[in-house]
Image (cartoon, rainbow, N blue to C red; front, side, top):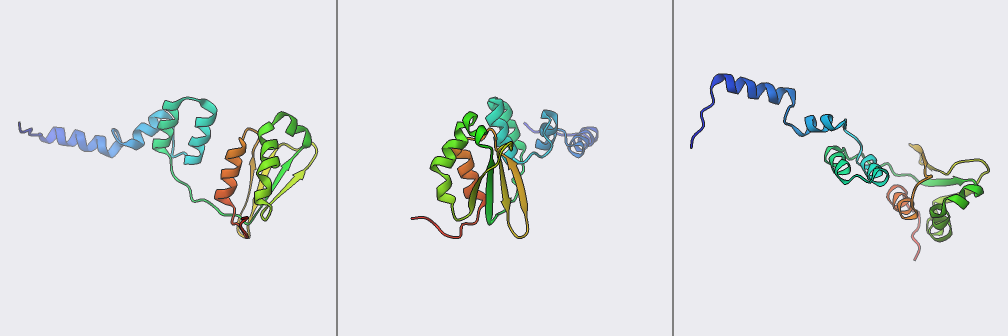
Length: 150
């Protein structure tokens, strides 16, 4: 069966394409996503526990360039460790594997924060709700290692 499109049908189709209707960008905007970072979609999936929403976000996300850092400081108040066992777990079992680039500083009345630095960039990230494995993966991804442990 052969379909013949008339001039008015072609004009309507071109208008829809020009407006972005039917495109992935239009669906993303309809869902409320305006080019989210893929890492933000990962965080959303962790906190919201809505698989459909997380998949919609991931289908709209933009992969950001990962900035590499030469050092990091994990600042945390000792009192926070009592209520954040995942951070205690990371400090006890994983932090030592980053000793060439990571310093753990206990500072009173400070929420858990990771400060990353290089010659060109610096970044500070709150890590209150992070799991030990997430923190480890983040550091592996972002830190340039000066020496590897055997």
